[in-house]
Image (cartoon, rainbow, N blue to C red; front, side, top):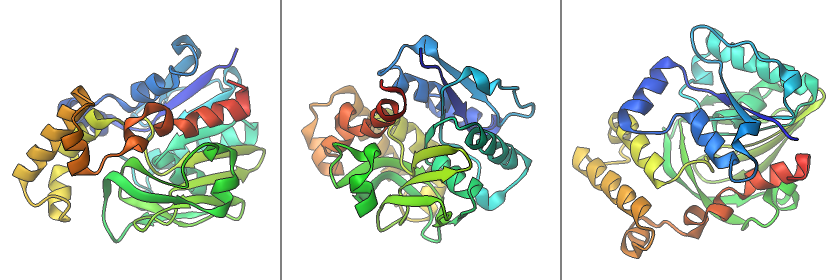
Length: 275
């Protein structure tokens, strides 16, 4: 029986903001996605970004998944170091790792790469035209995935230097590194910069959380534009037949078809655990 651990990357402040906007907590959202592939009672959640970190018996778990986070490598502190230390322990233990967004940055940083703030600002909502590299096209994480696709996203840090033992699997014009495989010590970490666990409702909630910064950087013209975007996303989430909204916002099947959207997760589970 495969047991997985989900590491919720958000600290107390981040969790409060998510709750206030009606977003699902990151750990629960990841567990929900993984529950499409194995029973939920085989998936635990650990929160390591709180004031008092939890003790984790890694020997209980076959694999570990990392959620996104409101932390920044460009603002490194002792909590960020806590993530790095745990990631290193998992690499040393040879436990397969997978994750979204923060996870890709964590994998690269832990193995000797570099993560900095993106001068373009926050890539938000949809990461457009993510293209697989030659290595990505041949990689088992992307078996069955179109060579160019969109993904839900929200990040302002990005990987700027790959570690020597890392492979860039995908990128786009906003962030050249959109997916990585990192082999380090005794372990292997597959990670994407985007969020296969998100849906339209979660992006709507995150828009509310991030609206001030998004208006400031020009992603939205004003608060009225934010309100319109949030309203349309929630309407499409409630009624997937709203082709008018999907067409207007440029939302294709790679975001609307759950099996395509989460294919990377399924491939990770299949490769390491035969699930």
